[in-house]
Image (cartoon, rainbow, N blue to C red; front, side, top):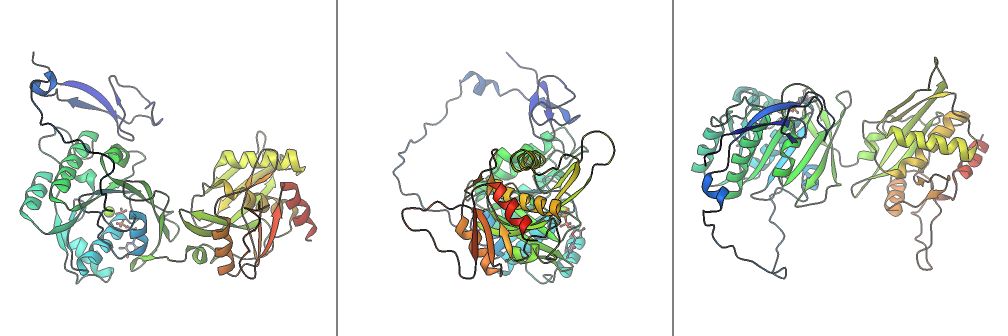
Length: 462
Ligand code: TYD
Ligand code: MG
């Protein structure tokens, strides 16, 4: 019984498949992202179960499991996010908006690896070899021994790599430009992107090199996004940042060989990306103390403490209708909740005000621990009394206004002390056992049980 190829519709953004065309993808909510795809039927023999597979060996959990060997790029911020370096025969997907600096980062990493004596191939489907050379020159890495190629043909790339024996890492920039003759659709479509990635991944696993795929995040347009590949690769990192800002953050979204909450911080300069080993200093560099509506949040990114400035601006409601709530770098829902708590539990009148909130520096904060710092900024904006310029805040705020414990208080306090802050406002600490950890030298602690304590204290500071 010969099966005809059937058709299905696949979302370019998230890869969900539908039997019929629909206007909006139910899985990711995007509009007009479905594209038609032909599904080849499975070969008759495998489908009917007639083909005999080999018997696989089953093993127990209690064997010796060695940690995977790593190839360090020696770019510390990159290695940290990778979980300690590249793992041979693994596949990393680096996603990000066009122009954010993916090619720059990977060219720098490739040159560093090549400089350390590893054989690295950088294959670009977007730029000509000369363009890459020029960029390398500008980055000051033009002399490194790196193998370059400009190609979009996966069959050619596979043949080339089959003939090489000592390749340690291969970078494909970008997967959306790659093309396989055997797939009857244009580069960048879901079927092409998946098929090309599949070929390259299979080769990487077989030949034992680490493969880095670049994938552009596309909001609109006809390119399949990196999300359609997330399940096929070992690690997914997103390179983020605001193009108006210098900072770039590499964040792991999935990592089979490491933690997913680590970040790498870089600054884009005219000589490429520079590592930022002390992000707090950078994020606070432009802070002006003693301005009402600003507070410093002692946050945590992965295992790393990071101090950030949060700014709030209140202005009388403009026009009819609901007041504006504009937020950069934080969750709008969380802000509404905090405003409601301030209003209901602490008697701060904010409902007639437009509220603007901004985490400076372009970092997106997701920790609930930021509640207390945001509250401090809002209270300060409402009262016109600046928070003390030597003070940091952290703590979660509950619906009844109670201030709750957050993880890693000690790491946050240490970072604050290191950067010269002298006071910290934090949740009332519960003594673990009978001893409490001593705060770092030079840091006075103000422990709060309820948000209203913050209002009375900060407003009285006048
Ligand atoms: P690029 O790495 O090409 O971005 P992507 O590969 O993610 O699309 O980076 C492009 C931007 O980076 C470009 O707008 C210029 C800027 N840039 C610098 O500021 N300094 C540099 O040294 C380089 C190479 C690029
Ligand atoms: Mg690029």
